[in-house]
Image (cartoon, rainbow, N blue to C red; front, side, top):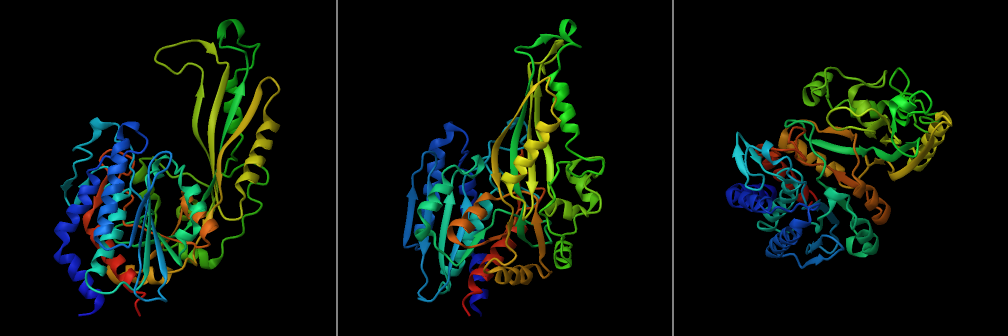
Length: 456
């Protein structure tokens, strides 16, 4: 029996016990945004710390932060020439509201029709435990062919305020040859997925001020500009009729999509029908001349994320609001500088805003796009996924952002392998979050094969 077969057999023989360990972690209500769960955050970090110590990690340390602790652990190979893999994850979860929409207790995992339902079952305790349990199976049946480090934070769901500084201050501690970040996911349960690109973002707010206070619309309407009307007119001018962004210079730095990229992206078979089914939208809308997958990952966007003006309660109140504001995000692709895009947007908005109001634009956050088609270890991971699923791997350019990948590339000089075994309909951040157990089990076998692929 090969080393890989022995490790897989060990997991299969101990699957019930190891699955229960995963569910024990899920039972801890580690909601990072809620001060009432502060102690639960430490409990979750300590749970993981004890388990890694039990597996024989030589160094396991919990680092305090201003909010929730960061866990670092290291297990060395006996091979002095072994490569080092850093595994990133987070143990915090989203709040469970609205609680009355859950069909079972969000922190008492319940199995129904091959799914485990609980908060954090997929995002991302399921992925963290898959990484750990696969490693346990390797350690219990042979020699570890690589050095492994874990970096597990408790603030991802609130923007990771402590993580950037920790990485910047601990580059020697975190030095590695490869990085595995299983916080991405699969496009379908029969489509193992490697995410090799992420969009960046420029997120800003537009505020339009008019009168010094809300005014009676009957007395003053027609003589004073209405900030809500003005803001609506500004927003309407941010797009062209074909769905493209109207800001001058917005697309100037984007290179044409190569045939190789088009072919790789086309392995993701996202259809218009699937989009409508998953979103509930009556039709698909987007930039003309591109497929849904291309619009999702390799084309930039501009979207209004929120608007506020005047009286928005029940009933009627006839006023001209004193101000109106909108929050806007631009999802960006490689070569687009997020600060440059903000400045282009700011200049354009100010150029079309009338002098009957005062218009201000504030930058909230900005981050560049990320491309990692050459991340170290990618071929090993692809071969491991293909061996388990017996199908070619889907390559995906993700529409969202994973800021830690960019920070790690900048500070550690290593691009991340972005994958995971969650599915698009797992309901992460929503009531009745779930994990598809057959996919999770295949994910563990994949990681066993991946860890051991460096043994040759």
